[in-house]
Length: 158
Image (cartoon, rainbow, N blue to C red; front, side, top):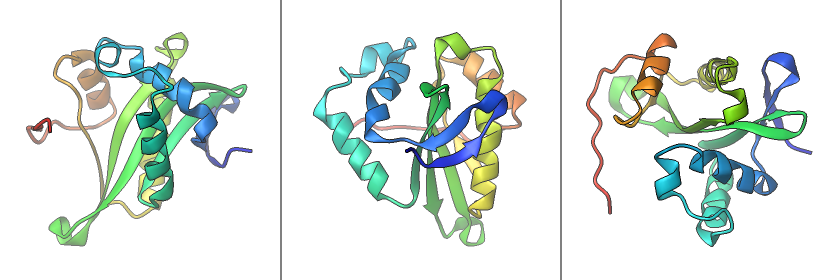
C-alpha cells in the first residue's frame, strides 16, 4: 500500500512513489518534446538506481498522483537547507509532469497547491523551480501560480 501524503480533488491521491510506479513516471517524463529526446527506456538501470537514492534521502520526496490507482502525474520535491536567507530551508520542485489525458483539467494547479502547502508544513521559507526556455507555456503556468522569474538559471552539463 502506497504512503498517502496528500489528497487532491475528485479522490485523487498524492502518494510517495514506489518502485512499481517507475515505468509510469518515466513514461510521463518522456511525454513531451524535451523528454522524448533525453530520456531512456524505462527499464534502464539508471532509473532504478536514481529511485533508490531518492527514496533513501529524507530531503527528497518523489510523488505520484493517482486516479483510480493509475499514475496521472508526478513531481519531485527536494528540501535544501542553506545558510542564506537566515538559514532558510528551500523546497525545489522538479520533474513535474501531468498525463496528456489530464492536461487542462486543473490537476497541475492542484498538485502545485498541494506541493506548496507540503513545503510550508515542512518549514520551507520558499519554493523554487526551473523551467526550460523552450517551454514558454510552462513559464506562463508557473506565473499564474504566483512564481516570479527573479533569477537567471544556468547549467553546466558534466
